[in-house]
Length: 367
Image (cartoon, rainbow, N blue to C red; front, side):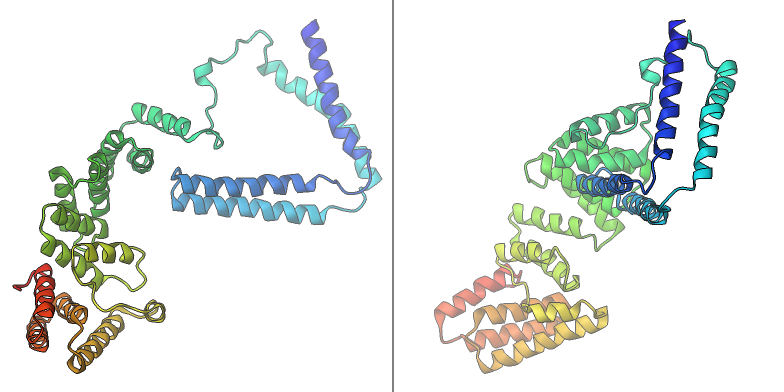
C-alpha cells in the first residue's frame, strides 16, 4: 500500500511540474540554460581532441551536430510568444490532470511490476564521462579492447595516448596491433618506430630503424621515418649520411612546413649546410606557389648566391651552402664547379682553406 502511495505522490509532483509553468505569463527566463549546456559540450569536444581521445573527423561531426542544436535552441527561444493563450493553457492543464495518470496506468499495468528485481550492475549503462581523469578513460578503452582485441580503430586511438603517458611498452604493443588489424601504412610503421625510440630513451635501435625503413619503402617521403633514419646515422657516427638525408628532406619540403626548423637544427648540429636561408617574406610568398614555381624560386636564390660569391669569395659558409644546395638539387657538375671555385678563392688563406675542407667533409665530399 505504501508503494502505491509513493507512486501517487510522484504523479502529483509530475502534474504540478507541468501545471506550474502554465500558470505563469510571459517568457521563460531559463531559455539560456540549454544554450549553456551546448556551449559546454563544444568546449568538452575541444578538450577531448587535445587529449587525443577522439579523431578530427568525429570531433568535426560532433561540433556540427551540437552547433545545430545550439542554433535551434536560440531560435526557439526567440520564437516563444510573449503571452500564452489562456485557452491553450486550460487544454494543456486538462490533459495533464487526466491524461497523464491514465497513460501511466495504461503503460504500467501490462509492463510494470513493483516486485521486479533490479538489473545487475554489470548490465547498466556505461556512458563515458568526459570529466573523468585521462587514466580512467584509458582504462575503459583497454577493458573494451580486452573483450574486442580485433578493434583496429580502438588500437589506433589508444596507441598515441599511451605514448604521451610514457607507457611505451604498452604503446608499442598497441601500435603493432593497429598495424595488424588496420593494415600496414608508412605512417603506422613510422609511429611504431618512434615509440621504440622513445622506449629506448631516444636511441634509434635496430628494431626502430627497421620500422622506419619499412615506412620508407611504403612512402619515400614519409617525414618522420626520414628524420629518424638521419638521426640513426648521426648516432652511428655517420654525420655525412645524416646531413645528406636531412638536406634532401629540406629540398623537398614546402616552405611553410612546420618541421623545417627541427630538421635545419639537426643539419646544423652535424655540420651540414641547410642551404640558402629563406626570409619570412619569401616563406609567406612560397605558401601559395605550386611545386614548379617553388623550385624555380629556390633555384633563383641559389643563382644569386653563386653570383655574390664570385664577387666576394671569402664567405666560407656561403660556399658550403652553395655546394650543399647544388647537391640537394642533383646538380653534381655545378657542385663540383662551386667546390673548385671555393678552393681557388681561399687558396691564399690556409685557415679559411682548412675550414672549407672541414665543411666539405661534413657534406660527404673529399676535403
